[in-house]
Image 1: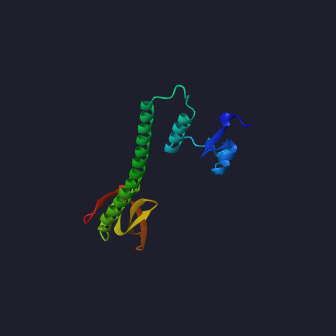
Image 2: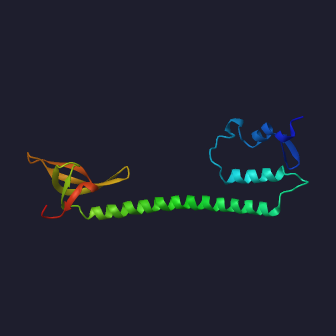
Image 3: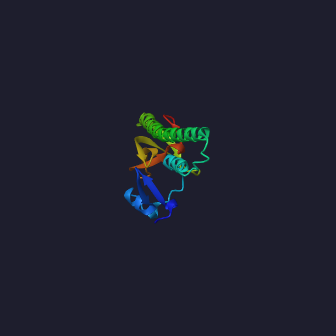
Length: 165
């Protein structure tokens, strides 16, 4: 017979630990891989604690209520954290959309920018670019030979916008 500490009784049927894990779709190699305790682990610990308590000296009801309140708080905090992540993504998208709209109004205007050192350039905004979450403008620059070329200008490097550049 299996050690009674390694058995689980569900709906009146007793399983050894490995058999129960296999019926639940949990591989022995997966057990213990989580580094964080989530709400399911917390509830599992509470149920296990109730299952193995000493029947001659049961745990006080107030302790169970306190643990259930903790569980409820944990679940609510998990839900709030998840929803805050959704809100953050939404706000980030709105910010990008507003920025693109504002930069679009610069199309056709002259700008001056620097390349991160003391080199300054001038050109006319011909478009807006969003690449890997980075928003920039496309400026048309006249080369010394009179030809035109386009260059991507980071917004942080723009020093002036408008006529009189």
